[in-house]
Amino acid sequence: MQFTAAQIAMLISGKVEGDANTAVHSFGKIEEAKAGQLAFLANPKYEDHLYTTQASIIIINESLALKQPVSAALIRVADAYTAFATLLAKYQEFAAQQLTGIQEPSYISKSAKIGEQVFVGAFAYIGEQVVIGNNVKIYPGAFIGNNVKVQDNTTIHPGVKIYHDCVIGKNVTIHAGSVIGSDGFGFAPQADGTFKKVPQIGNVVVEDFVEIGANATIDRATMGSTVIKAGAKLDNLVQIAHNVEVGSNTVIAAQAGVSGSTKLGNNVMIGGQAGIVGHIQIADGARINAQSGVSKSIKTPRAAVTGSPAYDYTSALRSQAVSRSLPDLEKRIKELEKLVQQLVAERTNSI
Image (cartoon, rainbow, N blue to C red; front, side, top):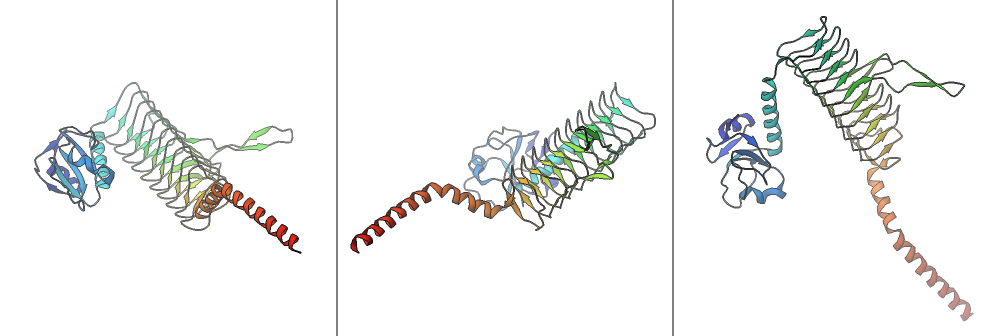
């Protein structure tokens, strides 16, 4: 597929500087791009590449002042990074639209309802009473359990497993290997030291515009629903336990885990490998630093915490600064002790 600078500018509301008929057929990083490729510049650290790259078209910020002539056609936009992301999304959407039909071998229950322009890859399984919306893409090896609902424009990548009764919203992306609706970790301790499994009869509800990374796991609720609210983004290898609620537009980085029945507010940011205990609440806009261990509720909106157990981010930085200064402080204390001893001795001798 080929696109001209004029066509691209129209898609991202940009203004062309240079030859509007310049065409590209693929994308490239600004430091590596070749002729016929499109690149973008958002980070000032890469500005030097703007004058040496072989890219044919470059998306730049409208505020950028050129230091020297550029051979490529430029497209100026308010935010180059956002514009490039928009362009990639449109490109991906266009490519996905070409992918429709049902590959064989695959299994689709006779009671399942399949919408229009749906793609079902080879070796996919779609169970009883499943409802698949329009423009859904289900890639090879995916499993869709009984009574699952998958709404319009959702993409389910290879090897995803969605257990029975779960609900997936519109414009959701679930990456390869993720498991939605596996049993929550519920076991009742017995008098003899064994554990009795507590049946998990709830489900998982994933709302619209959620993205779930590869090999993430979201457990079904004991009763009711585990809920991932609209716009949330989960990285690879994230674990969400039973009856958790992840707020709208919350982002969780890789290898983080949220224990059962915890409620995350909206616009929360959780760093990689952070761990959050169960049955607590995290206020809207809270920021949890990587590898933090959160053992108590965060009640203040937009609070930032770090450490294990996690506490106020600014106070933690001060504590770390003091900790790094301890050897020097110890040396100064010993010098003061010597000085005090000398003063005491001098005073004693003078009496």
